[in-house]
Length: 415
Ligand SMILES: Cc1ncc(COP(=O)(O)O)c(C=O)c1O
Image (cartoon, rainbow, N blue to C red; front, side):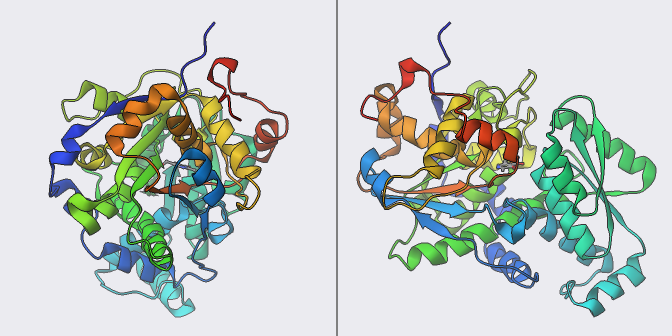
């Protein structure tokens, strides 16, 4: 049996024709990252996450630079996701109180919130990371949380959520089923859903979640400009429902317009809902049918976020889908870098873009993709390590025991 190829891609030439996108203006208005960053920097323990440079690997791949925004230690929660959940809860509370400013992390502020709003319970569906961020944010503010996961979620991820004070409910099915179930149960029980995906009539909260992610890029821009780089020339971003990708590419589209970095959205081939939507190509989001059985747990989503899709349809230059061995390779290369490059702890979803970048640069059949995106010696490529070691047992199976090896026919000869 031949293995699936490492990279299957589809170009979105339409994105190059759009100078100004209404979807971007609606989702990521100018100046929003300054606001979200100001909020996050008031969270006790906030630190700018590192931007790591991999110059040796960049030279080996024929690139100018590889820059990794390393979210593996964000607020000690091992992923970027808390940036979205915390900003959404904050924005929701502000809108309930009808105030513009709120020092929600001071004792006085959080007491006032509880006095005025009473006991709120925040609910969310998750593949692990978003739920952990919502649970953490709710508990910091003295609220309860209840988090829905699907039955293939690892015990380590469940425990990480519970250790942040949440009740965890396990449902049969996929992440998308958990989204539907939590919404139904929340309506019956009066919980407030903090979802990282949207549906008609439920748009404010996921918009706040996506806006919250832009703090990463406000930080990254500062870090890059300190290195004399005005903007990355390319960004590869991993996607489940597409919220992270829309925040990333939307941020750059808002800041630089047509001069924005060229972008590639990377999905698992077993859960490629955005790729499928681009392939159908009528501008609508489409679900991906199947059991979504991929090691990239954070990307195992079959239904695109419609709000995010609108941004990606207008701005993403290419969509790529790849098998699990691509992410596994990314994890190993991050963990055992070329001499002189720093190591990065990266989980399955986090490492998918590095794996994809390596195959894109090294496989002969990817030359047309490299050419159409202008990837080469002058390129400064931004990647987001969106998670660290969020599932330690599986992490060791991949990194130590070599699970999901690159099939012989796709091994790079020079390696
Ligand atoms: C580690 C990690 N990376 C990337 C993503 C993708 O985010 P989105 O579902 O917004 O596309 C997720 C989502 O949960 C995640 O947990």
